[in-house]
Amino acid sequence: MPIQNYCSVYPDRPSAFRCPVCKRFFCAECGTEHEGRLICSFCLDDIRAAVGETPKKQGSSEKLRSILRVASWWFVVSLQLVSLILVTWSICAFLLDRLEKVPADFHDGTVWEEGVFQ
Image (cartoon, rainbow, N blue to C red):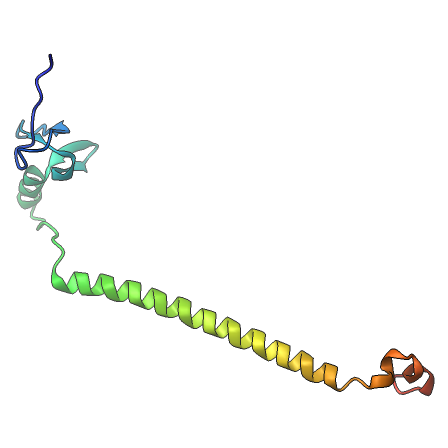
């Protein structure tokens, strides 16, 4: 029977991988891919610190930026939809106005005989 290993951070979860740097077991949520291999977030933070790169954490300003990005996308889509409706309405109103100005005897064929459209 194989031995079941569990995550070092969440002991109730089965492990998904073993970090090649620290040799501890972690679940899928605790790891990330770095240079083609799965590595735990703790070792990745250590590698970034050694290189001089600070780990990127999403602060409140980044959350606000992401919310505003989604809200602006919805605003643009809504504005395009309203513009489409207004253009369609304008075209229909123009065509209706043109059709109302067509004389009633146009369909009889007498207009052509009178020379109105020649």
